[in-house]
Image (cartoon, rainbow, N blue to C red; front, side, top):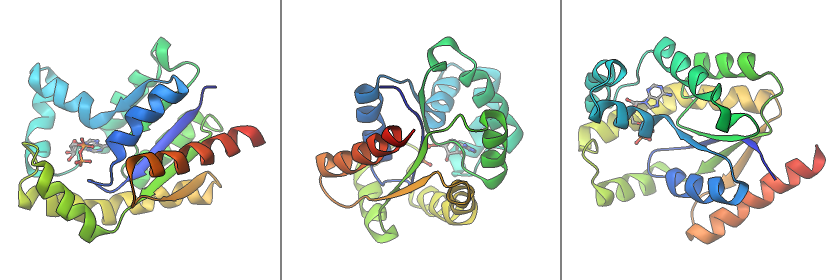
Length: 187
Ligand code: ADP
């Protein structure tokens, strides 16, 4: 059963882990803009070099760059029948661009909801290279300012399902899977 899915969640909400499991379960490519950009950075491609200062300071890249990147990625053969978007859209403009590009080509947007205080503790523990305390604060603030409006676009379109994200990985996964199966069953 393939699905066209968008996954939202604050940094540290466990979104990456859930996306890995979901991509396996529904046999769709996991398209993570963070992973794409980190790979580009490592390979020093033009996009990577452009992304570098933004990523290091935890700021968002310009919308036009991101929209171009995702349009290209969604055009690849493996995304033809389904995909899981992780990290895109992250602004209202990106959400509008995606909804315009795909129209009714999205089955569901899932928001994995974990309170700010809990995600801060988790992020300090995981200590990725770009997880300096300043970058964490900047990214969380950007989420409230930019991504919450993006999520609203999916709520307005009747596509949003909010999942309680506190709990064991398996529990949260179960909640997300049943939301997706319910939606696919309706379609
Ligand atoms: P996190 O969820 O911890 O912010 P990601 O791996 O999703 O990490 O993204 C890492 C960085 O890549 C972001 O801080 C941002 O600079 C950039 N980035 C990823 N996706 C987007 C996007 N859709 N729009 C703008 N910038 C992005």
